[in-house]
Structures are given as structure tokens and as C-alpha cells.
Amino acid sequence: MQNAAPPAETQTGSSRQFISFTIGDEEYGVDIMAIREIKGWAPTTELPNTPEYMRGVINLRGAIVPIFDLRARFSGGQTQASARHVIIVVSVHDRVIGILVDAVADIITITTADIQPVPELDHHVHSGFLTGLVTVDGRMVALLDLHQLFDSELIADATAAA
Image 1 (cartoon, rainbow, N blue to C red):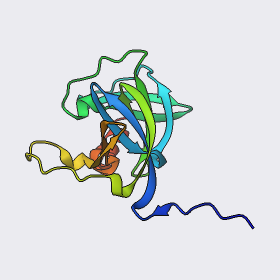
Image 2: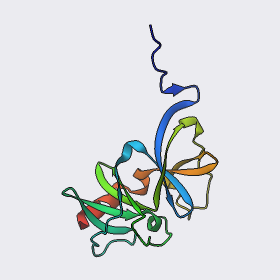
Image 3: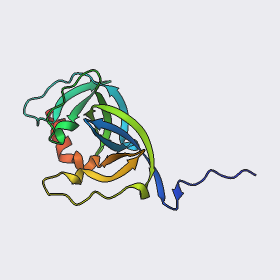
Image 4: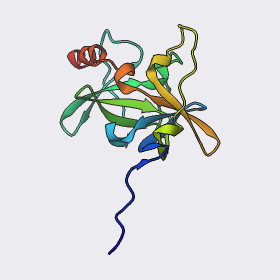
């Protein structure tokens, strides 16, 4: 009789997978279960009276998807998008949105015990968008909380504008 596959739970916690991506020199990760698709940059149709971090909308196989510029969302100025940039299509609050990033870096598998808490920061820093930090192959990856970063009101406003 063969042994069954080891359970996902270990002594150090359950295993989770994230897609990591870059914005400038920083690396971030989102839970792989939230990701619907990764596609190359496509020009957006801009909408009036939207925040700087909302680039516009794209038609994704008949669905109108709002695209958010993550660099601008983090107050880093708007991305000068080019063919090398990527849109990560994610599901947040039962809605589909796209996030514009510089590049996809890796698929990382970590245990929950590997996730370090975010240090207490000045209240001006948006650390509420982060669920934790993890070191992978000597580099620091900040794990994003998409539900905090794109609250349901923000997505509803973007969808209504579309």
C-alpha cells in the first residue's frame, strides 16, 4: 500500500501560493486564488472624473474591466505604460478588475508561518493594504490584501463609471 500525499498542513502552518510582481524596485505578492488571468498591457479607454490610479477600462472578451494603476494607487505617480507592462486580472469583492504592474516575477509557495507581520508604521503609510512580509530567496515580498486595497465602494464607483 502506498503512502498518501502529505497533508498541506505542516507543523509550521499551511502552504499558500502567491504570484509576485514588481513595481519599480519593489516586489509584491497576491494570493494566486484571486488571479483570473495575466495579460500584456493593452491601452485603456479613459473615463471622466475618475481618480489618477484608475487608468480606464478594457474590453476583456465582452466584459468591461476597470484597470487600476498600482503604482499610482501607492502614490508613486502614474505608470508610463509600455509593451513590457502587465495587467493582472483579479477577482475582488465578487468583481473582476485589472491591476497594472511592471512585470510578473514568480510564483512563490510559502507556509503561513513564514509570513512576518508588517511593522507598525506612521499613519500616513498605507500599511493596511499589506497582510504581511515574506523573504523569498533573499528578497523581500510584501503581500497585498486586495480587499483592503480595493474596497467594495472603490470598485463599485469604478464599475458605475464604466
